[in-house]
Image (cartoon, rainbow, N blue to C red):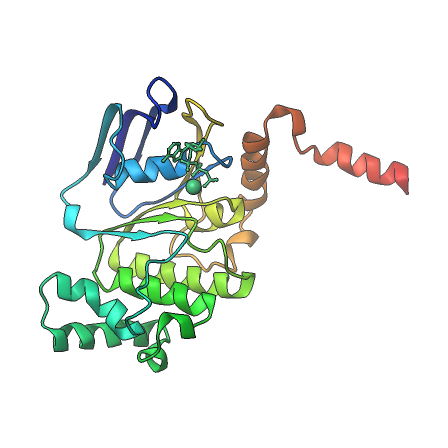
Length: 260
Ligand SMILES: Nc1ncnc2c1ncn2[C@@H]1O[C@H](COP(=O)(O)OP(=O)(O)OP(=O)(O)O)[C@@H](O)[C@H]1O
Ligand SMILES: [Mg+2]
């Protein structure tokens, strides 16, 4: 479980980026955080990861300090290591013998349809393949918690759908607790149990929280057909852009008719 309690965070003294941010991610829950660019989403993740000390409040990641995986927008593959070596590195750091680590790495590469690419270097991969290697790297460590910051932002829709489907299957199978930061409202709804909206900064706080009622496990292509999907998408959109630009379907239809 991740617990963020009333945290404030500032890079320059006296100018808080975050103020009073509180939320929880229960064990096994998938929670997304959305908010405008620059509002402080990555800063929250940095605080949870222990990379940035909050000036107030507290972050707790329960009993799992060694089993937290990070998936950031730019993957952290080492260019001078092969795909297999990149995936096995974390296992070796955890104390596995090289042969055992390589065998486990191969198992994960197989699961993510990457086995044939084990001897390649990161520069010889496509963007989507690199992202899958980064996912294999994280999953190989059997994390109980994964923190993700816009991990799929640079991918095209087809690769993105495939990767997110693979990821949610592992999340289900291994009961992983996930916090996802994303700009993509549809992705947030499709994947999450709860979506939190961060207010625009500075002094950002959690403006609203929205449970997603679509049953799990989910098929990423089916979630949009759930009756709750479209209304929630509209709600999140209105929350993000504010009252002024509210989507008003009735007026939109009227305008279309007038123009016709
Ligand atoms: N190391 C830093 N030093 C000073 N200011 C910073 C630092 N990192 C981020 N900021 C500022 O803090 C604010 C929040 O940044 P953060 O990266 O958390 O936003 P974000 O919500 O993740 O944005 P985006 O959606 O664009 O990734 C921004 O105004 C940013 O300029
Ligand atoms: Mg960010």
